[in-house]
Amino acid sequence: MVNVSGAPAHLIQPVVTAVVTPATVVAAMFFLEWRVAAAALATAPLLWGAFRLSAHLSQRTDARVHDSAAETSDRVVEFAGAQGVLRSFGATERGHALLDDALLRQRTAERRALLLGVPALLLNSWVAQLTFTLVLVTAVALALGGEIDLALLVAMLVLANRFVEPLSLLSEYGGALRVATANLRRAVELLETPPLPEPGAPREPESSDVSFTGVHFGYPAEGGEAVPVLKGVSFTAPEGGTTALVGPSGSGKTTVTRLIARFFDADAGTVAIGGVDVRDIGTEALMRRLALVFQDVYLFDGTIEENVRLGRPGATGAELREASRRARLDEVVDRLPDGWATRVGERGAQLSGGERQRVSIARALLKDAPIVLLDEATAALDPQNEAAVAEALGSLRAGRTVLVIAHRLETVRDADRILVLQDGRIREQGRHDELLAEGGLYAGFWRRRSQSRGWALRG
Ligand SMILES: Nc1ncnc2c1ncn2[C@@H]1O[C@H](COP(=O)(O)OP(=O)(O)OP(=O)(O)O)[C@@H](O)[C@H]1O
Image 1: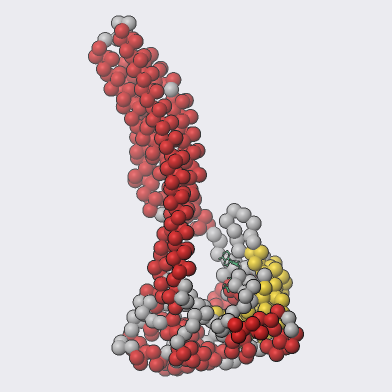
Image 2: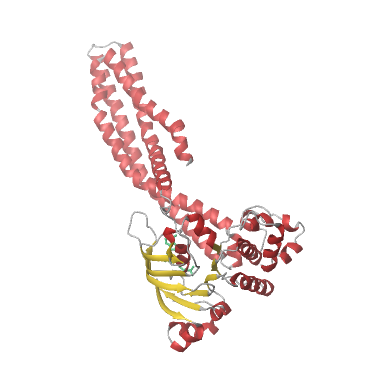
């Protein structure tokens, strides 16, 4: 963005100068001695050709360097910001590996840009020198022939120098201008992304069951075909019951929850709440019905109280305390020296993983939405936090429609319905004992569970 906003001030002016100066110089040359001016002008197509060629050579590498630099800075921010989460997941190594990869890609892209940039620079300066030489030879030949005097010769050489100098700079500015143009294009693309359309005649669902009917979905891919993630998913999560989503990593569990909250719309099929297509429910009404308790809980750098209040800004103090008590957040607050006024730090950095979860559960309880989308943490919490969070989740589930991406064994066993996802399809569904009796995928996973810590399905 800095590159884009800096473009007018830092780039346009030198680029204009680099074009206007040679044009003025050639005009002055014509005025003084047309044959020397004609020699300078004759090289114009050559100069233009060299400029285009070097632009073409660097265009692709510029884009690659830019993309890899953008990725590196994203990774650095992510790595720094996600330290707490990475640590609690015992995954700092993975964070390191991602950052290392990004740095390596950036180095390769820059090295390649440098290698391809050298011929482009050589070509530009070679053509610029050629122009200068041609003007020099013409002027000297004319002076030797006695057609121009020494003073005019010197004037011509000075002018020839002024002609060539800005042209060699033009190739440098050209590169920066291209980067700015590419950035501007990206910014425009982002701004032009349409929000999901609001229904013309919004409908209110009468109940809170969630159903998928023949849902197909693939994440919009930049430029290419979307890779299918959900391939014809159908199920019903009954009102007031707990439906557990289980399946190997990447099978589409998170995607199912995202489609309910309309982060994206299905490509085909219907996602409905209480029989009403989510696309026919207004965004505000939809959000009122949903509480999201995801792993990457969003905590902003305010006090604990402010973070819980986000669930329902108008809640009374008593309601706030009741929600916190049921989320077992009150005992955390009691321990902290500043109590409710304790600042949680950027992204909740001052709190432990289990404490952050309790804040987000309290927030969801305060919101009191009939449908809860829950992503259980994969992190091993200490026993005290584990028990508290399990209890807090228990109060959140009571009487609500819950869709839970389950990681804990108990959650799966106690669920009213288990959906076994694999490769974007629901392979099995039913209750724990029914699925065990079926002796299929789920039963196999369950048998192997004793070999893994907690509930982890391997693909
Ligand atoms: N924002 C996104 N853009 C593009 N592809 C995505 C995006 N989010 C997820 N995917 C891809 O969609 C597929 C399903 O991902 P999803 O997160 O739904 O799986 P999951 O079952 O929740 O996995 P996990 O248990 O590891 O969280 C994966 O191949 C993933 O790489």
